[in-house]
Length: 554
Image 1: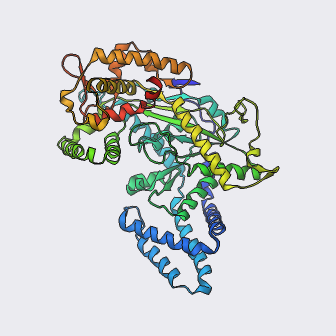
Image 2: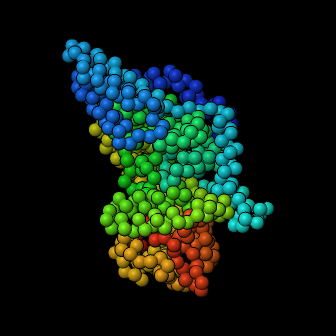
């Protein structure tokens, strides 16, 4: 297992037109029809003669969604479509209603599948390579490297700013043995783009299919490119069984067709800044179904790679943490949030733009230990191992009395097993950055000094008046580093290369890098030797990245 490498790997498949995702979307017209039929058969098998009630429930929920939460990206005929289907089914004669329901069910499924499917265009992908290299050079290096006058300052190479850690070689080797699915943590709207770029630029892997929230397609430019770079659309507003079945079937079908896939098992971005622990098992279930189908048809194996993303600065950290605090704190946070929102409006937007283009940052993509769809570890040849290290045949998981049998309830249990293994991997694969540790240490120092019960209690204080002496902070950091080295030795965490710095440089680096894109400073050294923050909420967000350490270190 490697720690923080800036190495660039050669592509394992040079020609883009030989990539599985390219081949998949070249046949998408046929595949769409097959997915529609599969979803239709699933719904009919599940609901039988009660399908009329399920279609009516679907139309009711969709009309409710249109009224309460419309989006720009929604089709112009959205309300007309759902009104028409609802009225036609309600008015249908009993002797005709089943066939009419089947007809309209297929219309609904076709509409969903058309929405979900993306595309993959070679020319767009090649353009994205060039554009994203430019964009990330600016984002992670700073256009002027800290000074509006220092235009010609030397910047570190992008390969030194986007770092890899974990089971990199092992993951690359798996592509010759089966299909690979990445299950990453989720912090920022940049995640999908950054992972996709790192996969191509650093890991040398073929492009993956990935799920993108339909809300991102509200923006025409983003919609144009994402829909041509292998992104399939996920609309979390749609809560009905027909849509969910359509999404699950698409995911299963694309993996069945050997397309490498990415999806975020946490569902949405982590609003608290914490590593995800309680993962959603929805789309994970499609992995079990795809593996069953591959075994039944003498196909290959599916490999799961948990992935942890870490930033020194998350662009959306402030709205995310305020959303979290508002939902979890209710009245405790209302007065404070109004004050902070008003305060933020008074700050010039130019400062945010200036920070993005003048501050340096880093990004770390850490690949967890690969596993099969049941969470079992693998040997060097991709064969599954049990808890004692003995080889096992995953076909046996799907058998009953020696025969392959589909069992939905059984697969739900298996999916929960996988979710636990992935969440556990996140903790072990998490690369701890200087900014995370210094933020965590600063927050702990404030806890010891002010004796507050929770973050809402902390927010009663005024940031301008609270400070921690840098020497005290350094002692706390030193103590934490000592304990963290023991955890790394036991392979429970990964420490970034910054942990090789002398203590003073480590602390200063963490303070300098944390939240560099924000208008308000997460941490800074004021006159003398006092460390302060402009925003307790942002400090809490970045400190939360190591919240799992509280149980370990106490």
